[in-house]
Image (cartoon, rainbow, N blue to C red):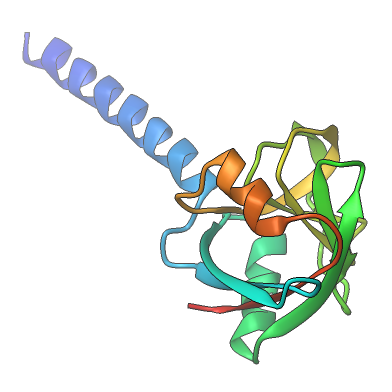
Length: 153
């Protein structure tokens, strides 16, 4: 009976640790960043926070941000994202995903995108903007060009 109880306990521990590790693969709560969105046409700015994912691309991005803010000029693409050149290359962890509003994506290793709608392609997730609804995000990002300043929070 003790052996069965021990085996059952070990089984539950393994299941719990597997679930916990899958959750931690999504986001690192310690790697939070700030994004200041400057609407060029309207001369307005918005401050957003985001949580970076747990992969080598997001870690490299976070390391670069620890050296100082990164400013990216971004423009609309496809009526579902803002995209701009990052000014550096980061390691890629591409996989077929469907983006959601608020996703921060690395594209081709040297471009960063902020999604305000869905798209399916081979991308690398860098992170996710916190606590902003899709309609709020679309309103913040607006039409036309923006300047996004990424920095460690």
